[in-house]
Length: 262
Image (cartoon, one colour):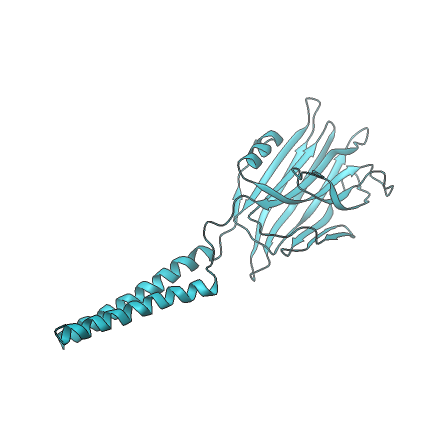
């Protein structure tokens, strides 16, 4: 009886070991917490260094002053390629015309399903399926030159894969002065698709109206690094469990041989 109890305990231990190994593969893929990274003082040069270190832009949603009209000589809105695209760096795959009111806040929404980007500013919708793939980070950027300012306010990040998963980001702004332009960043990390960002964009200026990208904001969506561990394929999961079961079977045969004196 004592020997049988030890055998049972041993089989249970092997099962626990197999399940534990399976859990180690599954655990890293549990939901990550939303992280807001302090990027005070980050410049465009610093952002380029982050790209050198492994951040890869997937796409960029942009709002800019353009020529502030419905004339298509300059765009005001765009969903752009990444700035290191070998053929068309930072060029829009889709764009739109928009008239910004001086000091008038405008609602915007950006959502990404993993294969479709929808970007709405006011009543303008831009949509594209040109981008697909995982994401882990978002950088929001504001830029303003002399006598102008841009502010993104009431920013909210929503993890669409879960219910009640909205996170308040706050606001981001830049104000250009006579001493030079002003650039600011916010980074959102530990995210995945599908997601949605909502907020308000406000562009304002005094004197001569700025043009082109001299008053602008961008939402840079990308991936800092591939996941360190991934969920095994179904065949791998089965192999893990079968390894545990095989271990139990081997143990039982070994104990039977011992009882027969072999």
